[in-house]
Image 1 (cartoon, helix red, strand yellow):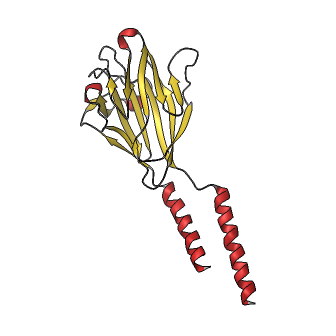
Image 2 (image 1 turned 30 degrees about the horizontal axis):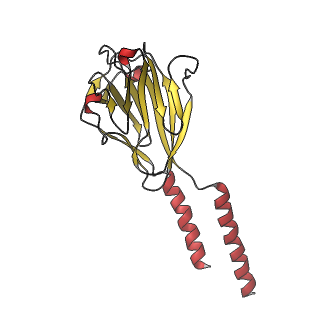
Image 3 (image 1 turned 90 degrees about the vertical axis):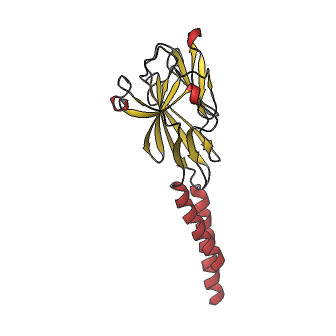
Length: 213
């Protein structure tokens, strides 16, 4: 009985730890840029961390620490101001587009679950015009590996970042060709599971009282 209650308390404590454990960390290259012409959000007109396509590797980007367990990752589309046809692909979830019949609306969300720590599995890219086609993977490389291709990163808190895309244009460096917000949250223990544990604990308490009587 005592061991069961100790185990129950441990599970409840673990669930509270998990709720605060998933965090985002930027692994950069030391590159920064002073943004001055972002039309999506004036707050983005500031100095930001960036990674250009020629500096992108498998070891840099936005990293999630899920050491305490899996986490839900929510991607929110904030907008796009671009002449090119761009997208943001969230692997295992869906894709945001800036134009066409499937164009996304600011506030649209995609949520996926990431089981282990690692670079988040998303990418930005351009599919038209032909001269600007490319894709920039957060957890991989940029194709082409051009210094004109870039991602920008602004930390909100330990669980949230803004990520901004600068496509292969003519060096405008406004980082408003697409913008998303990324939030992570640990996967909670299902309410039904906690209720079941509580019910078992209550039953064992009653059984012990009955035996004593």
